[in-house]
Length: 250
Image (cartoon, rainbow, N blue to C red; front, side, top):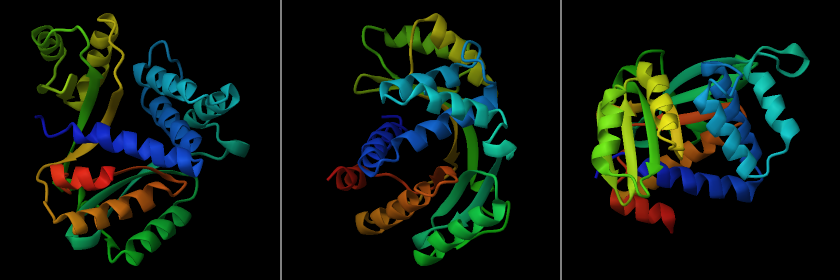
């Protein structure tokens, strides 16, 4: 097992929670905004944006909402307010390191909300650079294998620049340097493969394993942070064990 496949499970659980809270459109809009910021507003040349739009449509997100998110990603926020992408650093309960990806038109508001959420949970904000060194940025893709063969997927991914290709329970996962994101996206597109996940994310250099109760406490803090309007994603160095996964799915 690759050690990365828990991401897909966490995402599915998060989407179900978002839907219950009526926040699913907000998260989908954020995905679109980030995709536009990183690859432009043309889905024909931006595979990540194309995927984000497909996910939005699958959730019956109105066309106006999708177009508004694309405009926001292009810097055309409401009333011309500029949206900027900021990475904050902090610590959660039990010393777990956190990278907090934020999109905001008001840094003071964002910092105040993040600090409040962390302090309430016994965590704290951290100085710039004091946490980031514990992570590296990667390009990540996952998709169901269906009738595809492992050796064909492996060869395609490696030729496009992948560092690691793994297979688990009918799902293929590709880990690659961030600069190869476009090349791998194009290779998947040419192979008629539509990934369930395709994004740039941060992964810890070393993970910290906690007991299930403590691990759930950290995950609740992550969820609380991700519910804030300005937060796009939260990355941690918490090890997601099989038993913790089982507790999450309860």
